[in-house]
Amino acid sequence: MSTPVSAQTVKELREKTGAGLLDCQKALAETGGNIEEAITLLRKKGAATADKKAGRATKEGLIWSYIHSNNKVGVLIEVNCETDFVARNEDFKAFCNDLCLQVAASSPLYVTRDEVPEAAIAAEREIAVAQVQGKPPAAIQKIVEGKLEKYYSTICLLDQPFVKNPDKTIKEILTEKIATIGENMSIRRFTRYQLGA
Image (tube, one colour):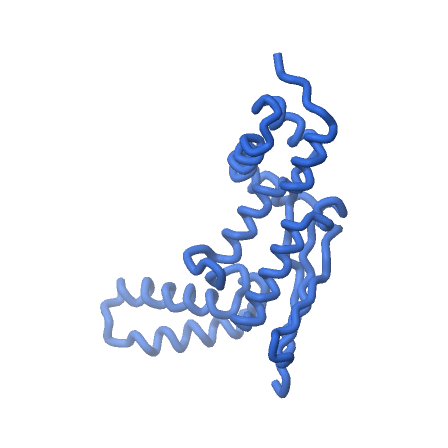
């Protein structure tokens, strides 16, 4: 039989994780009311269910802004989630701020690969093919695909290495946040301003 959990403990766990009410109640019941263990349990379960949440509508969220300390670079970004509760969560706000820092530092042009115009991809592919002339035909395809991956990691926000942890891409960080918070999230759009550009 599970241990009864107080509403205050559930509220505290929700505030720390941004996870849903039922998920918090279940995690606390499974961990005997231990908040730290419940957080770990939510994170483990969340990683497995992040993909399941991908199709859910994200109509809430925030428009977050960042102005660099030199006042010469500014970013506006729209990050969506499922509920206004999560949008008010400090972890969600910190994630939005990290995304602004990423855009300011790395100057992506698009959020996803799907937004890159076909003409730009074709031109990049043509350049890559020209650079590998003389190589064995079997190697050319792999080299060209590798160069296109590098291209995407430069211009697409989700493919970029995270400035605070270059071992992970923004897409991986987003997936982790979905798992931790327990709601689907998406990066809808951004605008980067640079003085004189």
